[in-house]
Length: 126
Image (cartoon, rainbow, N blue to C red; front, side, top):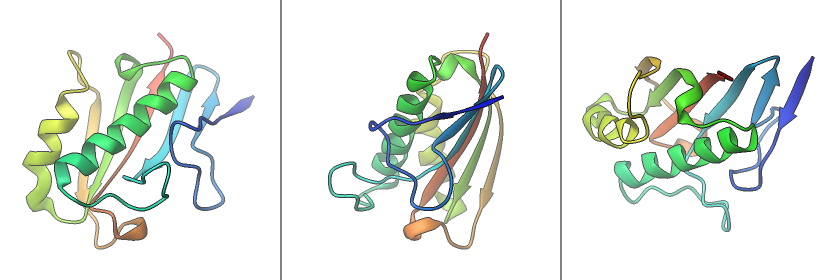
């Protein structure tokens, strides 16, 4: 059985998908971009700020499912420019303290709303 996870602490989906789906003990979180919750505008002042906001959205969704970044087993990072890898990695790594999740990072020609970074993840209740 699956359960839709939604929190107003992260952007509402901009298409026909859910913020996250909990299936059994596994949480599948849709890709998040740096949307400002109040204006619904994309934040693009710096790649570090954009990544921080994405990670904050992911954290809010994890919390709504009763989890934290400690539960994350896999992430997917999509970058509009692989030259931003080091800066994104610097922010991303600050959300994990040990036992880093598996990860894929790719450069994508274009992301939703022309974002510079999008991150999705999978987490498991421990």
